[in-house]
Length: 148
Image (cartoon, rainbow, N blue to C red; front, side):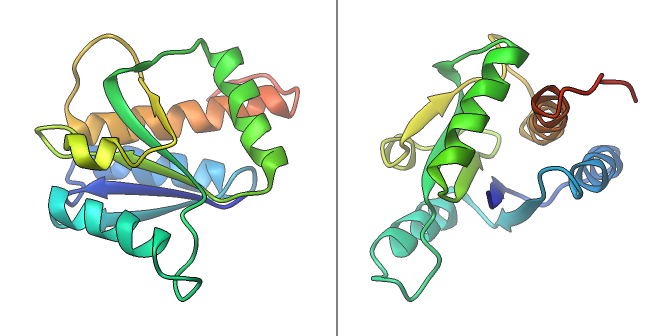
């Protein structure tokens, strides 16, 4: 399964090091491609153009907006959910908005709205938390213990 994380803004220290760490850990298990967008408008345009391109751009597949109001799941359920997406054989596109979150029109284009928890967190931290949860899910699915 191809996974793309589309995020608003460029990641900065100290979050950049943590993101690089999890991307390296994920590479052999569940590779993730990160795309950084300049602003929320660019985020929306990317999804709209991919969905309407008629095949000239990669289909974004299943689009997931990560939002505080989204559905939250325990790690085991998150792993099961990812496994279901993997068996669908479609690309998985995960969206993280900027400081103001994901605009409503972009959120409305998503197939799913998920949450990383009830707390509000910095969007750059959300990127790291999401990658950590993807790594944890990949270990759960592989039947391996999670230790760093």
